[in-house]
Image (cartoon, rainbow, N blue to C red):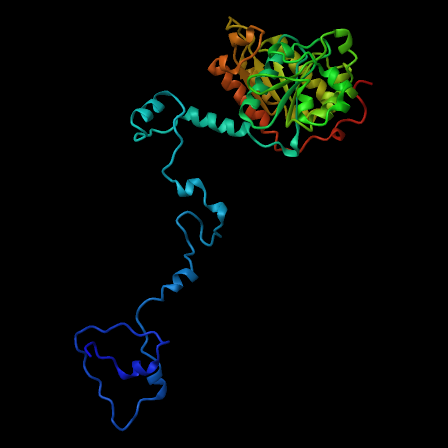
Length: 397
């Protein structure tokens, strides 16, 4: 038989012992072995040590400690297989402007990336979609002065949240003096908050509640107040507690459009159950003083936590005029007292006083409400505010 010569010691070793790699073809100098001394039995049984690396099985038994996308010793799991890791070259498609035009014209070959404004908007949308801790969150929109855009801010905030989120958002008219919240959407039912209160024992599912509400194109639902002011005055704090007790089982977010009076009975229940507030003020001297006085009243009556965690919206309800009010100083005043301040610019669509459609808002106004929605949604992750945190003595006594 033809083939390379194999030392007899390797033939005697057995098939279960790895064979050393072949030696180079160049002859090596012979090593004389004394004829009178036989080789030890151990030397004949053990093959010469192989100079090669470990067998392939070792690569599976001992993975590398340091990976290209993780610190040394990081434990790998399904959570580590992120899209950013597996698709490093994939980027979001430009959402508009000349960047999207170039992207489409080149069939996706030229991807300039998103602008800073688009990235900022994406970040705000992500914040507005934050999950609600505890399953339900109540927001009270209030102002001591009328005609500053409080009801409009309620619709703008609620519509923005409802259009971006997958859960249910409802706006409740808590104004005892014939509120105008129902004028901002196309009514689908003549039912009011009083009807829901009287028939709440019949509500056992979401379809039952839906019979008392009207839904806007943004998916925001409205629970209207009584049309007769004489009837709505009887709406008390206990009535508000009963209504919101029903709504919390079917809606994630409840936004209450409060009246201008802080001393009517329903306001006690609204502030007691509110998780956070949105204070609306006009960018004027009298409007700012009224808004600041509202914060003073809340702090004096045991609602300082709502003031610290609240958001102030400076709403421009008139066209740009020759007003010399320093908006920067006005914003600094409220920023020192609350969590954040948002400027809502004038919008002719909102001035009409009719149904509010997000698609008809100016870009600056829509961005302002998106910013307001993101700031309000930042409070969704906090635990729900306990009514026991307020003063035990009723401020209305």
